[in-house]
Each structure stands twice: as C-alpha cells, then as structure tokens.
Length: 364
Figure 1 (cartoon, helix red, strand yellow):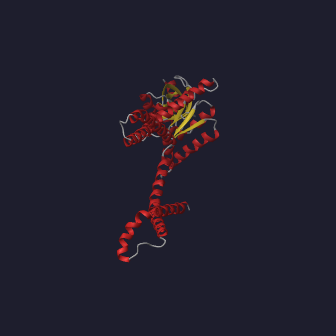
Figure 2 (tube, helix red, strand yellow; figure 1 turned 180 degrees about the vertical axis):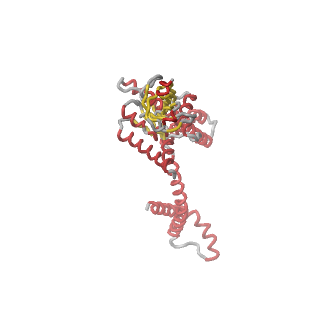
Figure 3 (cartoon, helix red, strand yellow; figure 1 turned 90 degrees about the horizontal axis):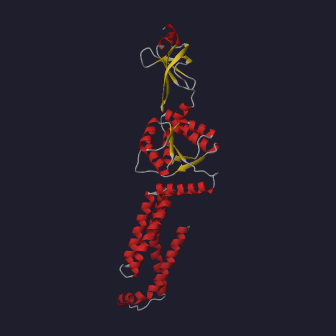
C-alpha cells in the first residue's frame, strides 16, 4: 500500500513539473510542429503537459522504488546482523570523528582556505574512520565502560562489591558440575557465556553423532538451569573476535578484555591460560581439593576390576571415581581386598593412587 502512495506522489510531482516547464518548451515545440501541422497552439496544452509529466514520473518511480526497496532491505539485513555493542561503539567513534573534523576544518573554512566540497568529503572521511575504529575497539570500550560502572557501584557502598567476571568454556558447561557449584554459592560475580561458545554448543547439539549430540543438548540444558533456577547473575557476551578462529584463543582474549577468569576443566586450556597470564579456575582442581585425603601407609578396601597398563598391575576405583593402581593386583581381579597406599599423584587432570595388596606386605 505504501508503494502505491509513493507512486501517486511521484506522479503528482511529475505533473506539477510538467505544468511548470510547459511555458519553457511551448515555443520550441510549436516551432517544430507548426510547419508540418499548421498549428501554433493546442487546446488544453497545460493539461497534456501535466498528464505527460505524471505518466513519465509514475513509470520512473516504479523502477526507482524497486531498487530503493532492495537497497533498504539489504541494509536492514546487514544492520540486523551487527551486534548492538558494535553499533554503539561505532556510533561513538563516528561522533568523535565528526567533532574532530569540525574542530580542524571550521577555522580553515572561515579563512577561505577550503572549499565546501572538500569540507564535506573530509567530514565523511572522519566519520567513516571514527566508525571503523569504534567497531574494532568495541570490546575494549565496553570493558572500560563496564569497569567504570563497577567502580561506581563499588564506591556507592560496601554492600555493592566488585563483581568479577567468570567466563565459562564449552567443556565446563557440558560437564555440568558448574551448576551444582553455583547452587552452593561458592561462585561469586557474574557468569559470562560468550556467544561463540553458544554457537559451538549448538553445533555440537546438531551433530550427526549421537554421543556429541547428547553432550551438546546436555550443555544447553545446564545453561537453562543456571539462568532460570539458580540465583546467579548471567551475562551473554555478544561480541566476537573474527580475526581469531579457535574458541579457546577467543576465551583467552575475552578474559584479557574483561579482566576476568576462565572456568574450565580442559587441561590444555588451563595451561594456555597460565602461559598467557590469564587467571583460570579448574573444576578438576576444585574436585581434587574436596576429595577425601588419602595418605601413604593407609589401608583401603577396594575391588580390583581390570588389568593395569603394566605387567601384573590391577585397577580399582574409589566411590568418587579416583583410580587406584594396585601393584601385583592382576591375580586378584574380581575380588575385594585390603591394600596399602604407597603414593598419591595429584594433577589438574585428576588424582591417581598407587597401592599394593596388604597380603603381599604381610608375606614380606
């Protein structure tokens, strides 16, 4: 409907211009047709000029509106795909660019040293450069604004403390234990879930492999539980680092930008964060810290269930899943026996206990 109204408006404008120009083209027109037709005038000449202008502009408006509509739709799609943070940062940069251009070229224009055309081109150039710089530095700008806001909240009163950002990676979301930890209240601050992590979870959930698909769906369920059921502040970070392809590298970069900590149970990401100087919270380290302490020389009742990697070894497990390597335990597979702990190995990847059968100790 709006398209028809625009076409009608164009037709009226064309008709008005036809009447306005009728006097201009009257004499040349009749100078051409008078020798042929013998007419030096035409009844209703202004009416015909109005109709001609209206038809001409109506026809042109059909083509013009088609291309303008396509251009507007394309622009809407591009703007719709741009994150709001990038639009805000780019707008701030563009405003700064316009202010700089006004400061630099105002006195020059008053002095007559620049033409209006050059001034307009420079304004457009500064605005574009400001927008691009603002878009590139959007993450640093948003982090600065967030830091200032946190500083105001911290200065407003002791009740409003600084909320540190805890950035979740894909592995710790799929693991699921982060929801239980948040429920206990041991995690303080704001949980940050980057949009590129959500995209990776969605990709895993849509995988053709059944195991991967179940892992991805489990991760999405855990996020829904954290957002809807737990009293935890959650922030969905919409920014992205397009120049970086790896998700782990993006997490490290985001942690630097937000000055936050990465929560993970990925051993390799843990090491990368340490090398990059980024604080990291490893769920496996927390799990190992709260496990019952087992010291060398203690007795444990275990059931040997399978062979170990080395000759003669047997493998057993505690109730919490800790693996126990029993020296000489291969002969006791399927039986329950007392073992003596000889050593304990604890790493970020987990805890391993080495032991030997108590019967062998008595025999010695």
